[in-house]
Every structure is written in C-alpha cells, then in structure tokens.
Length: 246
Image (cartoon, rainbow, N blue to C red; front, side):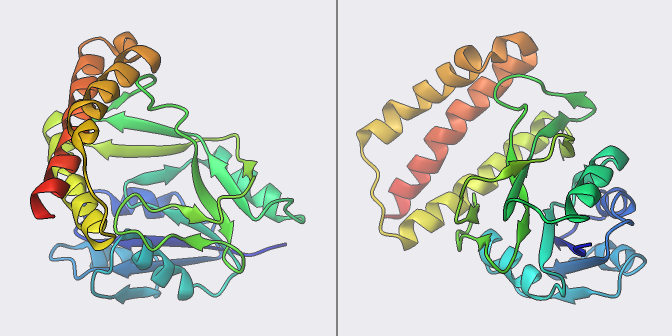
C-alpha cells in the first residue's frame, strides 16, 4: 500500500485548523508549514503532529512546494486549513492507494460553503480541484496566487467531495478578494504583464454574465446576485491594481 502525507500551509488558522486535522487522522503523515502565526495555530497543530515547521512566506505555490519537500511519502494530499475530508472521501483515497494508481494526479469535487450554506451554483460546484498527487512527478507552479499542480496532465477523479468552509460571510469574502487581487497584481508585475482596456472594461462585465447566467448564479437567489457582482468587482480590481503598479 502506498503511504500518504497530508500537507497544509497555515497562518492564523486557529478557528479552522482543528476541524481539518481531526478529519485526517487516518493519514500516515501530516506536515504543516506555518508562516509565524500570532494565534494558537501552531499549538493546535502540534497536538496532531510533530512535523510543524515555521517558514517565511514565499507565495502560495512555492510555500506548498516547500511543505511537500518536507514530506517523507511519495503520495501527497494537499489541503487548506479550512477544508475537511469526510470519512467516505478518506476511504476512497485509501482504496485507491492500496493498489497501483493509474494516474499521477487526482482531482476532487469540492463543496464550498459561505457560513453554513453550501453554494451549489455560480460555478461553485463541483469546482474540481487537483489535490492528490505523486510528488516525484507533479509539483505546484511557482505562482504567488492561483497556484496549480503541473504538469496538469489527464488525471483521475475522486468521487467523494472535499468540504471547504471557505468564508464566514459576505464581508469575509470581500476581504479575501481584496487580498487576492493585490497578490495577483504583484505576480503580474513580476512577469511584466500589461493590462489593456479590455481587461478593465470587458472582462469584469463578462465575469458577471458568466457567473450569474451561464453558471446559473440566479438559482442562488440574493446570494447569487452578490457572488456575480463580487466576481465582477474582483475581476476589475485585480486588473486595476495591476495597471496602477505598472
């Protein structure tokens, strides 16, 4: 049977991390890289594993690769601190790894929650995301934000979803989008990527149309309107910030 390491990067995740760690006690190894949290994150993590390291922030992609480099097993399941693996999902992963996996990369559907509400539409489900991989063949891109596993080859799919308790509410959602847009702008500046008028005036409108109509955000009622408007604003904000620092 292939052994598995679960890797998590953290910073000030006191409110989420225990729920996450409780759900992965079946793993052969848990490895955490913390960015000098000022709350009880590290203390809680050390209740579950001795493999807790504190490192300076490098960006999402590099930080996740650093965490994977500290894992002793070839197969890695990367999780965010606000995610949970159900017992059914754990069983499917263990069954897969008990044999010889066909692929080097596996994706999961993900149930995203705002507060206690599962968001089914607006592009929020099934939200297939790559998380289980053979670290000898796959790694994260070196992106500061919106990192992804590469090479993004044809992979397998785990049927059971990851639960993602992503946002406490609308205010939390807006605050994170503001932070992500700043990281996006910094990344694009590093790559000397230029913004043109279509990014500022066409893409935000398309983001609203795609989220509300094509991804059926209207089926979420008021929340769907909020998500479509927030995606429009985020799209404009990330390009406006990029333009402002060029």
